[in-house]
Structure formats: C-alpha cells, structure tokens
Length: 190
Ligand code: ADP
Image 1 (cartoon, helix red, strand yellow):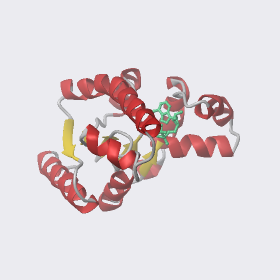
Image 2 (spheres, rainbow, N blue to C red; image 1 turned 135 degrees about the vertical axis):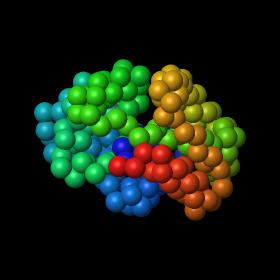
Image 3 (cartoon, rainbow, N blue to C red; image 1 turned 45 degrees about the horizontal axis):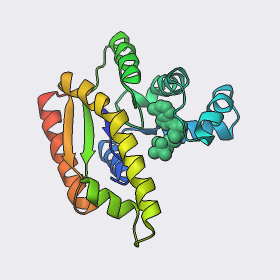
C-alpha cells in the first residue's frame, strides 16, 4: 500500500505513521527526517534546504520532490510505503500524482488524523504555561489549517481521503487506522 499521512501538530502523526509502517512492513518516510539528514551530510540538496528549514519556512517544492522521488525509487519502496510530511501543498500533490502516473502505481489512500482544536491546544501547551505559548500554538494550528485544507480538498476530490478520529489513547487511534487500512486491503488486493 502507498499511503500518505496528514495531521496537525500534536495529533500524533509521527507515532501513528511509524506504527502503521511497522504493521504493514513497509518503509516509513518522513520528509523532515530526510531533509535533516541531507543537511547533516551537507549534500547539495541539504545545503540548499538548510536555510529554509532554519528559518521555519517550507523547503521549495523542487528540492522536496527531488529528495522524496529519489527515495521512492529505491527497491524497498516497491512493496509500498507510508509518507509522513509529503505532500504538504497542492503543487506537491500534483507533481506526486504525475510522478506516480508514470510509474503505474497510484496512491492507496490519504489518511488525515482529526483532533479537536481545543484538545490540540491542551496537548501542545501542556502544563498550563502562559497565554503567550497558547497563542503561539494557536497560530501554528491556524497556519496548518490554511496550508492543509486545500490539500485535503485535493484528496477528497480524488476520492482517497479518509478521516481518522485522533482523539483518545494511542491504541484507540491505531485501532481506527487499522480498521480503515483493512477495509482498503479488501477493496484493492495488491
Ligand atoms: P514540522 O512539523 O516542524 O514542519 P517536519 O519534521 O515535518 O517538522 O519538517 C521539518 C522541516 O522540513 C519543515 O519545517 C520544512 O522546512 C521542511 N519540510 C518537511 N516536509 C516538507 C515538505 N513536504 N515541503 C516543504 N518543506 C518540508
């Protein structure tokens, strides 16, 4: 299965996507991790990406696409993969679809973790710090929504978007993910 994982900060996207990758025995590909590794190794891409990353900006679509497509071309991705952090924008989703179309292996699903704004604020600004922190966190969440809602629309229009209730314990959330994935597996045996 080829799965894209989407979720706001604090929703547990990292944990759940790693767990799903282990469950399906496919690679877990985090673009944040890949880009940080490229920075550490001072590759040409890493050097170019470092500036944007250091100032909290998104890395350019071209650079991210180069890193991701190169990784997806490795043999271990033939049996599927979980993408965590890509695509983040509609142009990236578009480029990804074009790339996939050439290789004849479409995405199986885009899973989006849905957690109530109030719960995210609680989780992220835990232990009752100042309003300041809460406002910074709220700002981050607004930014996420702004950037992500067109991406969700995109995958909704392509009929591969599945919302996952991200409230409750990690096991509860993973149970819901497994259920969706099991349904997908019966629909499209690969
Ligand atoms: P964060 O949730 O703080 O963005 P990540 O680990 O997902 O953390 O990503 C770290 C950084 O890597 C981001 O701030 C951004 O600069 C870059 N990055 C990761 N994925 C992408 C992407 N799909 N498009 C552009 N930049 C990305």
